[in-house]
Image 1 (tube, rainbow over the protein chains, first blue to last red):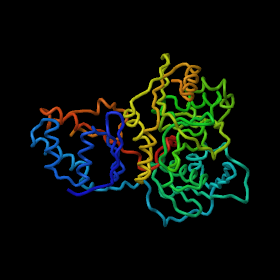
Image 2: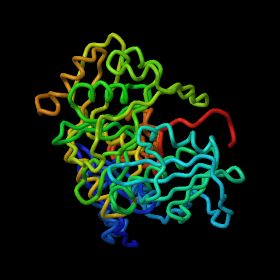
Image 3: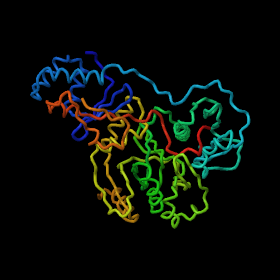
Image 4: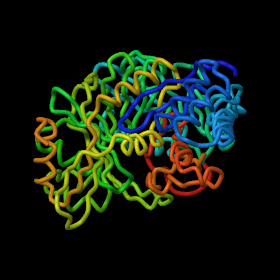
Amino acid sequence: MKKKTNLLYKTVEDNTIVWLGTGNEYLVLEHTTADILKEISKGATVNEIAKTLSKKLAVPIEASIGFVLELETKFYKEKNSEKIEIANNHKNTKRPKDFEFIKYYKINDIIFKVSFLSEKELSFVHPKFAHLVIDEVIDFTNDFEVFINNNYIFLYVNNRFIGSWDNSNIHYFQGKFSMELIQKIHQKEENDWLGVFHASAISNGEKSMLFLGDSGNGKSTSLALLQANGFTCLADDFVPVDAQKQEVYSFPAAISIKKSSLETLLPIYPELETSAEYNFKRLNKIVRYLKPNNNDFFAHLPCTNLVFIKYEKDSKLSCKEISKIDAFQQLVPDSWLSSKKENAQLFLDWFESLKCHQLTYSNNEKMIATVTQLFDNEV
Amino acid sequence: MTKQLKNTPAISRKDALKKIGNYGKYTALTAIGTYLILNPQKAQASSVPTAAGTGF
């Protein structure tokens, strides 16, 4: 059998997680099955492997052979590497000369000039960063251009074409914009990041934890509550983790607050009363943006916990440690993870070190007290 | 081998662990042939909702 080494293995609880380099996929397997994959990669023959398996499981050799062959076909035969191109290659599109909106954003001491062709382009980016706006300046560090041409939205950074996306991939345009921003803030390239997580990140000044959960579960609301109670908001929605130290990096975007959370948050954040409201009809969402309380956007801290949070009306507070396999299963499909082998290994090692909890709450004070205990390792 | 679960976090692990017929009578094989396949996002994405309307 053909040798293949582009695999990584990590034992987690009763399973083995296998990373497949081709396709940057993660498998959750039984240990025995992962061992078969290892044997295949070492060059053992189907018959050898099947014989051992047949003895171990007391099943007929024919069934074992069938099983090993099927496994090999599934994970070893070169997959048709259909590379999904999300960004299109439209390098030759003419860049506009005049932009209707030019904004200057200051992040720490770095100034970004961002030119938007019209209000439409502005609406995709600006609301989340409006709190960083400064008056026009002559000296700026980075020059971003955003324009729509022929039903594609284009991004240029410092005169370099980054990509173009159609309307259905606007969230990838926004993701790339944020990625370019974070790379410029921290002087890192894409390969220097382990991944970007769809989460909220909070810190107590020494370490951080990520809050995860489907939209509507209360990630951003709990983040807003926590930042009013002594914690720092490191990032909302877009949480970068670096490869070198596996630390959570702060991201300067504002926290999006849904209309349904206003009642809870208005007493703490009266400014939300008058802040602009954005109606995203397609997603049936009305949101306002709340400034993060972090003022050091160079901050990065180690992460100790993943907390799957859920606000459930009238529920009793519950905080329990959950299976890491369940956590992994929820985490991976919602994240961008670097496809570089070294980074995939670092990601697996990092994940292994995290504690994973499910926190269900309805009472805000109790939720805050529980998060404090989680930070203090008292849960 | 059993069914694959691709990018469907809403489905619980229990739902994903379906058995297929091939090894039905060999429960040991069915058990070790149960797996999950998880695909990360292909690019960085934002969940920031997009503005109203269709098309640009």
